[in-house]
Length: 109
Image 1 (cartoon, one colour):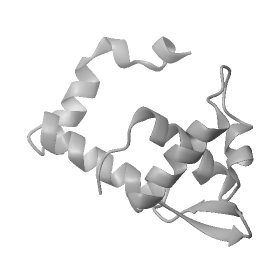
Image 2: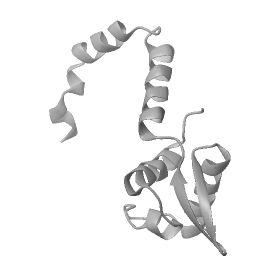
Image 3: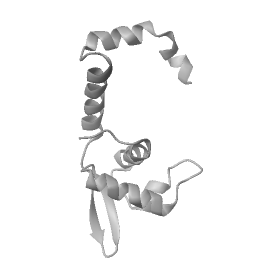
Image 4: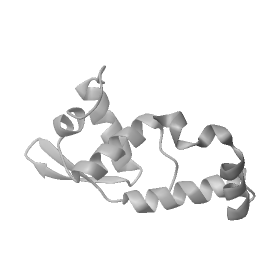
């Protein structure tokens, strides 16, 4: 598994939420300015090549659905972050969060 780009992750977040959908269904919850239909279609096909998404065909239309769960991807990303930034130490990760005042919940509201 490889990390997703920001655009790929945005689409995966939507697919994990809606569970399955056509490109138009993925576009609907996106914030303005929304990407072009063809852009979303291209990113979904890239996600399919990467093994994150599959589809069911209805003639020329494709209904997409995730084949990597949100939990699987979350676990992968956290392990990658632990390895890359915290010497594979959960203790160092928690110490980081405890010691960084800018990470309190009020900063993100």
